Amino acid sequence: MNARTVKLHDIAHGRSGDKGNRLNVNIIAYRPEHWPVLLAEVTEARVAALFAHRGATRVTRYELPRLGALNFVIDDALEGGVNSSLALDTHGKCLSYLVLGMDVRVPVEPGDGHEAEPVLQTAR
Image: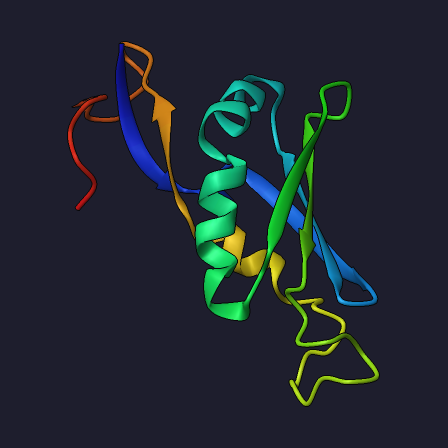
C-alpha cells in the first residue's frame, strides 16, 4: 500500500473545550473513508506528545465509530483551569488546532492524481 503525508486538518475537523483542568478534544473525519486513518494515526501516545509541554498527565481516547469521531480527554492540560490559569485561552477552545496540525499518512489509490510515497518513508 502506498500513502502520502497530509495535515490532519485536511481530512478532519475538531472542537475542544474544558471541564475544570481537563481538556476535551474532538476530531471528526470529513469522510467515512478517513475514519481508519484517524484510528491508526491519531493515537493517545501522539496526542500526549503534543500536550506534554502543557503538563498533561494522562490522555484517554474514546472512539465514536458511528460518528467517525475521536474524543480525547486530556488531564491537567489547562494550567489549573479557568479560575487558576493566567493563559489567554483558559477554556482551551483553540487547542484542537494543535492536534489538527499533526501529520498523518493517508492511503493513495492508483490513479487518484497524487504521487504515492512508500508507507515506510520517514516524514520530512
